Image 1 (cartoon, helix red, strand yellow):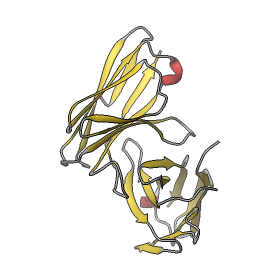
Image 2: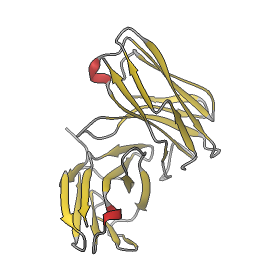
Image 3: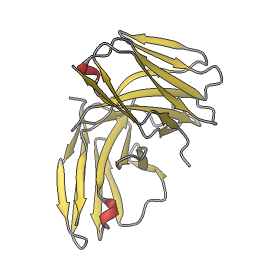
Length: 110
Length: 114
């Protein structure tokens, strides 16, 4: 049983479309992070959300932490080919252990 | 360039071989990690070192043996591996192993066990 469930697993869309990726759990996390991993590279941090209900924006990416700190979403507006990659959520449990979701593989076609 | 360097990038080994993966961080961080990334599975935390002391060992088989000689270097010694151990092994570092700090990952070592 995975502590963090990510959906969808795969997403293939056209440039300019919007999309949302979800990260859900029955556990409460101290904080939640989103990473993007491109082929042949390690994951790179996009954002950390700490407070329940928190919303953070990074250009066309909007991240939200659920009120109960059990879930999170990543919304991309007007996706571009450069957004292609594997998106990973990671929840911090007990302040010292990150649990990762299995990832959402996004492909944005020009 | 994340400041975390892993070598080798690719490794093919037989089940009876002994090899090592190396990780070096140039960020002055106090914590270093080994993660295993397999297809369609979440990243699995294997080991955590804080100030050269192992603080986490997630029920990893003894055929994987970590070593942290100083806070900048981390090794993963491999021996008598199984084909199911084939995966991308990621090293990461962070300022501290507690708190909400960012994990800085290396590019990974792609291991294939024949």
